[in-house]
Image 1 (cartoon, rainbow, N blue to C red):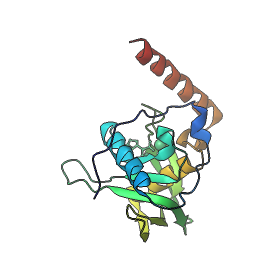
Image 2: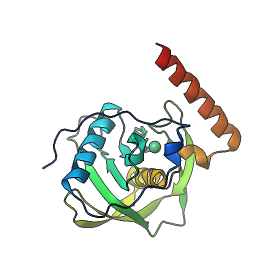
Image 3: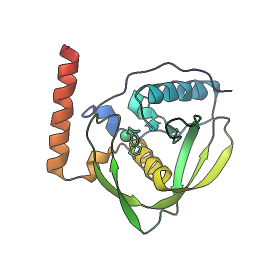
Image 4: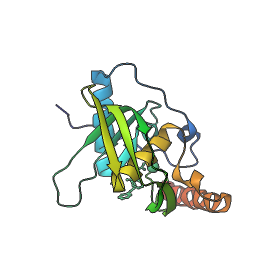
Length: 176
Ligand code: K2U
Ligand code: ZN
């Protein structure tokens, strides 16, 4: 049974740790579950609808997600060693944001559907079809496991402007 986790700090660009390629988890243990409990608490507090372990500085291939809308019961999902299968040829733009790139939003084109296979909270193999926001979010989070943030899909100019803006805002926050 999932436990309440600890809210942990979220890394923001241009922290070099966000470029790390995360390592697979050998076995889903109580430590893995404690990590996922902390990730979920951190994601809800942000708030966000997805979070990759590297965003709290842990280079393990672990993702949490909750796509439940406002006023719906929470539907937490836990992904250990997720892999994307059969990405569609057709792509769709979606205005993405990222908890590691606060207050920046821009369109990213991604395959409109895919399948994902992963180990769940108990280490059981699950394979699902992803469409709509699920497809966008799982691909956005999988990028994090490869050390990629959504800015890396934009032009150099847009990326550099966004990073400058985030750094300025973080500096202001630190001096407040
Ligand atoms: O990886 C993250 O930082 C979590 C993102 C996940 C996400 C990004 C783009 C598109 C869908 C999901 C955060 O949840 S960004 C905040 C957010 C909240 C609701 C809808 C879209 C983005
Ligand atoms: Zn992100």
